[in-house]
Length: 513
Image (cartoon, rainbow, N blue to C red; front, top):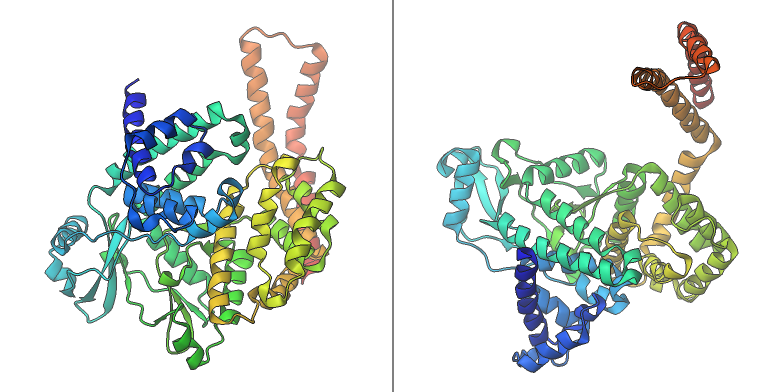
């Protein structure tokens, strides 16, 4: 009961903030009674003057900013949920600026000394108290180490964990309420949306995880000169402090400077995004202009690795097939991939889904090449999911956001160049390598070998279960007892199984060279 009372009080405060920004429509999406919104308006919160001429999504973004860090994160999560809030609101929320007033440099120094257990004068020759960036969870300071290396020092906000904990508890209460009273919203998984935000925040609250992500991405792209990741200074990194090499360069949204320099940035972005998503299955999921800098060599330098995405190999294969099916106009292939992947239930009509896919793709793919947006196409695809009982795929939503941001960056730089046309040959070559007969055979034999490796454990577990049931008084038929005895005897004759597995491995080695 206490949680409900606290939540209702907080909801009332939030609703008044939304009303001041003329952005009460999310309450309708969550299924709040109309009388509640009416009561808020009747209470007369004064509307902020400069929101009058803004779009609903822009007003909501401003309201979420004023509500604090957890709500900014929620807005970022909703920015990839066009199926829930619509295309225009999704677009407006994607521009949500994750900025808050900074906390004092003296507080940052105290946090650093507590976390690293050393005086700041021993850690750095110089440390700038004025942060270069202040976001919802942390802020960044410039410093120079004792050996003269320029570094960026990221420090978590004080007491940010408690603030997020309170707000996330409220958001979960609202999501549970929505699922309980609005069954049609269950397909959109509002509880899972909040859980995703919570997991993302939990990772971002431990800067060692971000350091590990940066290290992994840097290793994956070690041989790629067009994309660089700063080195992590592990000796000056802890749970609330992250130190990396300092990145210098031109922000990627400064078009005039970059065009004049003549760097082929769209091709670089297309290649790097392909490598991260398809080759490695591990990608930077927050590549907005504030996190991308272009150095004198034309390389893209990325920062801020708190939000990363992962895709397993099967999902990458499905995604490649799906995208190429759209690009080649093979809509039946698109539909079959959705069914094969389990995104659309098998009892749904493949032909009907192919027709629906055609209905959203043709208007987009019929545009000039420079106007084609595969991210928009995926967003439209999510809009038809309800008809075919397709559940939301969280792992693809993060990718859609990344694609959308990358497209926007590319279009601002070179409006006549389409990055997906540049990436298409890379995707096709990858599919030939990863989905050809030799690779399929190798993967199939790998599954067989792994299954055989698990077989002794499975047999032992079965025997233990039967023995447990026997001790508890369960009587077995004599034929069953004889079969189990034969199975025990067969354990000493398992060498043919392992021989067959070894033969299969040898075949793979011969076929793949």
